[in-house]
Amino acid sequence: MFVKLLSISALAIFCVSAQNATNFTVADVAQAFNSAKIVPDVLPSFNPTALLNVVFLDNTTGVSVNVTPGANLTREQNALRPQVFLTSNDTSLAQQTFVLAMVDPDAPTPQNPTAAQIRHLLAPGIQANGSLATGAALVNNTPAISDFLRPTPPAGSDPHRYILLLFVQPSNFTSVVSQFVNSSTPISNFNISLFAQEVGLGSPIAGNFFLTGPDANSTNSTNSTASASSPASSPTSPSSGNTSSSLGKAELNLVGLTAAAVVLGLSLL
Image 1 (cartoon, rainbow, N blue to C red):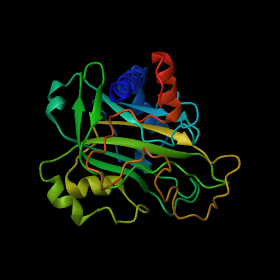
Image 2: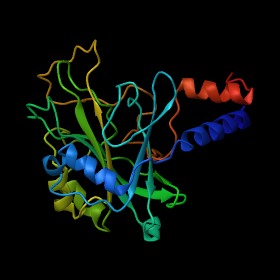
Image 3: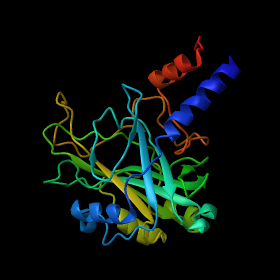
């Protein structure tokens, strides 16, 4: 059984990783950030030097979804914690440690963002695993400061922008970060630019973003103080108390595992 599960997992990870194919450039990302007014709404400027490829696994179909900057995703497509890759010609990044953040600047609505920014993810201690030239998986074995929270824009809202940013982690980060943010700090009214300045993160080296609106049958009120207030209900959500949580490992739901099993001719039982 253990060997079977290893085989299924290996195939499943291969299937997800095979989707790590960027069809955009650094210039495309910078232009998309400006067009979506992420500059200056979230960042004073954005001059990426690397590509951040974000791959979600659809919660209902098990199909991998590659995020092109500005893509519209459904709530089922981004319900699970994504796999993230870094592509760069700068080989020195292979030895770096990173901080990955995801924020929503449009809560509760883009027209009235009184709760923004919502901190959907803040994960330090991330390193590149694999070839940067072809896309290295970003992985970590330390707890996230803020666990991944699935996008949940309230009923009646226009689509929200969900922005992922990658920073090089300074050597003193772990000793100073708790002065500003910890696992019990409210996720609302966060400011990623101010936070980056306070802890010495500098400018993000890479980023990506997508749009998500409320479900047609959503009953969440636009008076909500946050676009997401609890972790995704999926068992793949990371836990701040789980030191083996990884942002770069493929997170597969039952649909994905079953599909892998069918390919291999194996049984999950």
